[in-house]
Length: 454
Length: 94
Image: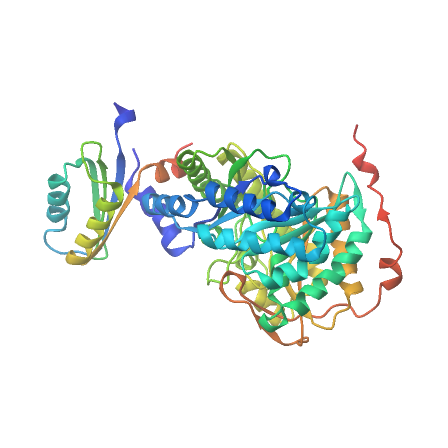
């Protein structure tokens, strides 16, 4: 039987250490909404989403109440819209109308984000893919809750450098289109290599074509829980440290598994995966950077940071894998800058640079995330940063992503405020040397030799 | 038998005062909720109690019980939480 000590430990995690279920994300296939007539397509999309997700928010709230664990976000991911809208959309404005429909549907069912305004173009772009990509600045400036992502590379296919070049321009245009709100459009735009089909976390969530009609994916989080646990083993060996992280990750993930199964049962939707990530928020004590400091760094960015992060990421996975019957998504430690107070402090203290962040992405779960850069950074430079990050993902057979915000009108030393979970960020410098000739070559980078495993 | 039980964990935390257990138990009895186990300690004058109860004979919905106990806690001056047992069993048992 459960004892007082165990109950107290669980409730302390929730009340004092920010343990929560970060998101219940309902994946919805929109492939059956394809129609050559745009109006029909829009109507089908709206109907399918509002019907499938009508009980999502209430179910999340009920589960939170009954188990006493906060379920922070209820969200939706949909089939990449380039596939859904290809038959109906003749220009970028047509695609943007789908974005507006997604936004309306998100408002109607009460979710705070809807992901899947996406294209997967790791080997090449179809006409529809390119139209969707070109519509992103318009779509993100006209909507509030729509999130967009573009997969431009994979270990199997290599990197589509034409798409990388285009995305540098699109990031810049999105920044300009939303410049009155701190270029916030870019906070809802992710460029991926090896994007997973079942990621529940925004802004990169989409419902991949490998998925069924509907699916429930859950993302858990608990940086504060891990930090508190390892405070107790300060000065102990790596063996003790790793065991502690593993056990804590197990407990955190079990909560996600329980909530995922319960949501799946109540909604009558199959359970997909638990994403066992450490996802920070700007709240005090909810920081991945603080874990790295507790492991032994004065600041994130100090020598040893990459090794500490590699250790953390690996132990989170090892502990989490046994706690859930299906693990997927991004699963690992997120290192966004604006969403993590410890990371912001490290940038302000001069400890953390873009280059060190890039090194850290080799061993973390995703990539360069929520980093504010000067508004006058060229599109080519942004493409260059994207290409670097995609190469890391391609060669290391892992998911990598770029979510950069060139903040129009701001430079190094300024701060940009996004609000809420997106936090705020100091603008950090970008290497000023050019890469235009590299980006302008055109074509694609071939898949690496170790992709040929057949 | 086990499958039909609706096990719920009630925790009560706050400053110690006369009659906390009596009031909570009275509420549970009135609502036909059976107490399976109680453990309680006082840590630095703080009252800390956990009850494992079975709601299967009660006609009240979980949300109503949770809300009414929360209200009762406010009257006594303690925090009363009501959670389904699975959250603890999942986390602490393999």
